Image (cartoon, rainbow, N blue to C red; front, side, top):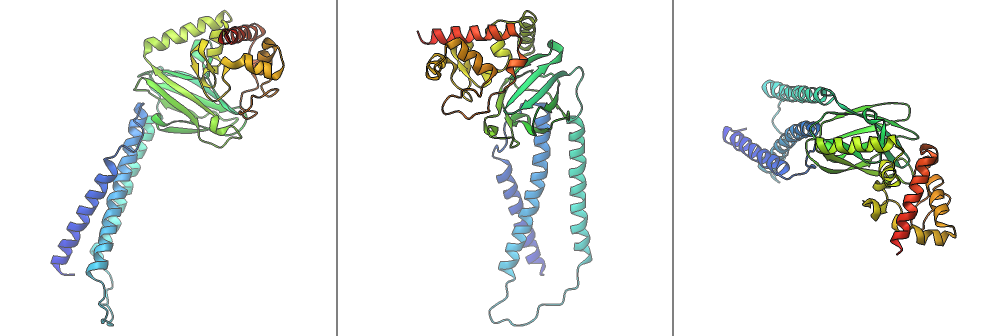
Length: 338
């Protein structure tokens, strides 16, 4: 190859690589990170992606240049020159990938070690998955249960997970960490939220008929707001709690709409229409509400699949809590029909 052709080839390859890398990296492809760990993970992703795009652009441009510049003419039937190798090039194309792979390994190992290390005094949350709902328990606050994951901003959090039935997978896109949740095992995730806001909790492992509906929310709040919520919830739990607090504690707001509780969930039936649905079922309102809690598959509102609602509230709630919850829902339903 003439020196002029080699220079042209190098310039074309560098220009194509730079353009391809810029085009790939400039758009905001990933969710805005909402945790310290997510920022590190995004760095590794773009570090690796940038290397891959740069190399691909060079290879593709060199291939295209060679096809155009050195294609055989229609009347050329001669054999090509006998080339037996080029020691310098062979060393180069072996050494460069080795260096890049080593760099990727080192960067990934550092980020993995940092993301796997819990900060000082982490908030511990036990995550329990079941078909088709998430439950979050706070041991430091009387093992308070919530169907919504509430976290204080800028505080290290340790999530300890398990499943009651089948394999699920915990994922909050803005946290950029995903963890399979397996029965009998207790994997952990470390998260340090950095942005106040509300983010989806999604199951990403096909776990049954209601898999697509197995969603919840993560609410990241200020430390003051979190302490107020946690201690308030703990106090309510200690005295049995009113129906409204039990409704919120058990995570009903994640799936149902109920104006009296400020709930806007769309996964399950609209509880503001309980009175209408009780009439359709031909049952007294209070009996219908109680049955819907303890035996949710006994009557399923049209348009909603069977087996979605957790079926252990009858044993999870005490008689006092169950009675309070029924009274609250009946009262709310009657107000909604006025």
